[in-house]
Amino acid sequence: MTKSISPAETNLQSKEKIPFFKFVLTGGPCAGKTTALARIYSYLRERGFEVITCPECFTILASNGLSLDFFGVDGMDKIIQNSVMDIQISMEEGLEKTLRGFGKPAVLLCDRGPMDGAAYLSEEKWNSILKERGVTVTDLRDRRYNAVLHMVTAADGAEAFYTLENNAVRSEDAATAMTLDRKTQKAWSGHAHHYVFDNATDFEGKLQRIVDTISKLVGLPSNLSRRSAKFLLKSVPDPKSFPEDVVYHSFEVEKVYLVNQDADKESYSFIRKRTTIDRDGKLMGTVYQITTVQQTADGETIEQKRIINAREYNTAYKSRDSSRHIIVQKRISFLYKLQSFTIHQYEKPSKGLCFLHAQVETGTDSAREAKCKVEIPQFLDVDRRLKGAEDERKYGAYGLSLITE
Image 1 (cartoon, rainbow, N blue to C red):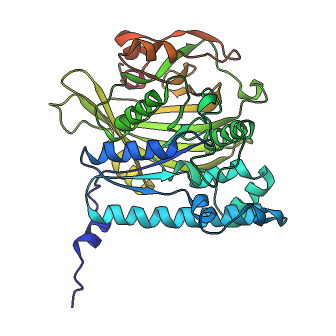
Image 2 (image 1 turned 90 degrees about the vertical axis):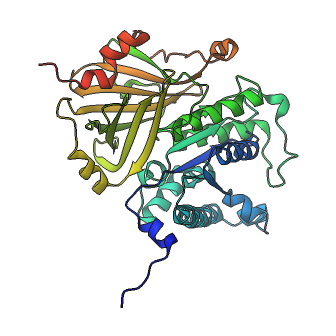
Image 3 (image 1 turned 30 degrees about the horizontal axis):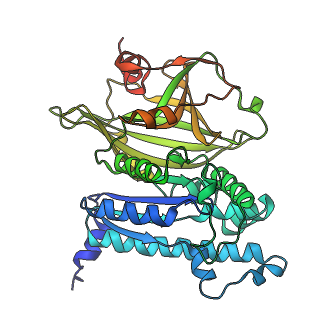
């Protein structure tokens, strides 16, 4: 007798991928995460997404009896962070199943994530947790989330608004908040979509920049005209020569463009394989992603990105566009003065070409444009900034991929 499967179970097992996105919202103390989560939740719900928020797990413990006295016992910091990670992972997985089972486009908003623990432990203790669990940074950072949204503490740039009054479990002074903010940024640095939102605008502007960025990530129209500024580099940089305080992460990237299934639309898709390279040159964990890019009638570019598994990547690979090169790059990601940068060094095609991509949110608002200028790292040899459609055709990955011979 065949066992019947419920509609919810069918949704969970369905090979038809219903849009699902998982974002982690992190940052230093008093950065505005609670308000931002509420704003994002309402915004996405009003536009047809089912949304669930996964609460901050340390706050759950602290609100239910965990006190600072626990940290008075040597070694408790590691045990507590391990417990926080257990709860975090379990809650996220349960909530993800709940959303996927419902069978509608959905977003899981996570208030902090497993990598936040690295900001509160010594490097030795953090690495021991990873070893004991048998996981890597790639597992906890890159594979779990579509994007990481970091809100900078009000103690850095909006000091007048830094307060301990709206969070009963917060005890950090402004200096400590800034230190924790920097450590948290470094913990998540290296994720392919790591966005840092500083206090260059007022708080409402900060919230709008976050909403605009998420709009782009889920494929909704937004007020952002672009998310990155691109610069041509004169030479390939050696990351070992970077200043000691610049923490960098290296990756090997393979990008494969797919045959356009709908020739009537101004759109294209590609799959990407991104493998972490450790300091000794050893290949570590790999993350796979599929991206669809579409031009709207008014000329806006909308991208939708989704993490996939190796089997899905290999299946999609069979539909690759043979009229285009497979793009192979080495990428180096790092943070510099509250901005996220990635160096794209081409191996195939056009070996030797090298670009710097800088996170920047811009729009039609001239005041915002003025406050979002890129501060170029002085240790890089920049030729010029790329601008306009001609540069995009000549130096963009989509243009470079086209086989012309």
